[in-house]
Image (cartoon, rainbow, N blue to C red; front, side, top):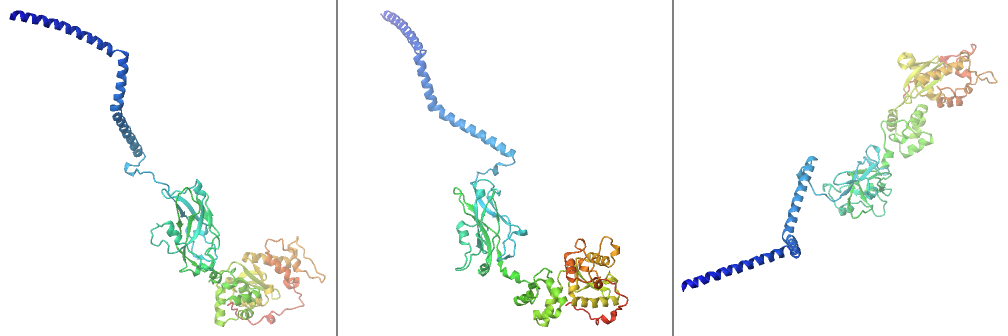
Amino acid sequence: MNGIIMSNSQELGESSNIIGSTQNSNIEDELTTFFFSPTMKKMLEVMVIQTFNRCLMPTLETSIRNVVKHELELVEKMFLFAKGNPEKDIQAPKSRSLKLKFLTKVSVPVLTGVEIKGEGGNSIEVALVDDNTGAIVDSGPEASAKVEIVVLRGEFGDDDGGNWTAEEFCSNVAREREGKKSLLAETGHVRLNKGIGFIDKIRFTHSSIYMRRGMFRLGARIVDSFNSIQVKEARTESFTVKDGRQLYKEKHDPPSLSDGVHRLKNIGRGSKYRLEVENVNTVEDFLIMLLKDRERLKCVLNLKPKMLEETISQARRCIINEQIYSYIDFQEKEGVVFNIVGDLQGLILGLQYRPMHLLSESDKANAQRLLLSACEHWNRVVPVDNETSLVQYLSQILLAKNPSNSPNRELPSTSNGFENFSNLEFSNSPIYSPSIQDWIDQCNYRLEDLVFGFDAHQPHDASASKPVSKKFDGS
């Protein structure tokens, strides 16, 4: 019985295996057909794309960005190191910052009524510069901005280290006193040209000296605005303003010949006016009047003896030039040469010039006497530029005396038989200056007064005509 049951079970198992294997074979065929079908391919593509976008793409994108950034940073570092700029110096770009800057210092002293100049007598320069680089801004609308020049209090900025705000700058602008003139005589505005402006023709008014301490600075600030770009103001070093009216009254020691006579000590407004009436306007005029008429000069000045000597002494210390003066006494056939302060330079003997170092003591005494005579007959004194011009002048007189030595020059004659020296054509001669020609035109001497051709029957006693020798005191 058991054997029959087991035999049946085996037969059933074998049948089941045959059925199962047949069914599996059919399923595999169906699956293969399904997976390789076009529909399945489309589904798989969609699934792969969705899976990539959802899972792989974010991670991959981040990785790629990090790699690219890392590589770019390496390239940037290599480039900067090659330019000599290490990584530690790499800074983020700064925002644009501009400021005004005075390029020229103010020349001192600063005087009221006198134009303010920079060092060396040049115009004061102000420039617009880049605060980050220090370079002048020479392009763009800012490079032609309008700049206002103002006066600042001298104490502004003594302890701020160069840092101030726009409000502090404005609060330190010096204002004129109520009812008084402004501190600057002109409105101070400058138009920049390629970032640079020149400050000209500004000066302090006389009312500025009455401000406290008289200490000031010049300031500069931009009037225009440029897209909210802030431009820092500029200021100069502090300086003192002095009264320029005192400059005119200042005395010069030693004075120059061209200085006004008011530059001499003890000559005030009244003395200056009285001297102008006498045609004495300069120190040179003063010294000539001192030689011509000392007593008249004393009367005009009306000074005490000590003050008078102080004024004369200062005038005689003047800076003299090479100009000298000659006087010839044609009757005595001799003359003298001296300078503007009355110092003897030499003697003229026989129309020959002899300097002082070649003269004997008696000749020097004679020269002193002739100097007194020259002061008494100043209309016969001839100024010449220097010793060379003097020698040439004497040569001209010799030509006039001996016309036969110059065949091309004829002397015009007068009705009485004497030659008129003033009509000699000396104006074309290069050795005659206008002052000499004017003297010749004014004197109009006859030739008998200028040359030594006296008649033998008219003896001349030189000793009778000589005054008593007296030492000339030019002081």
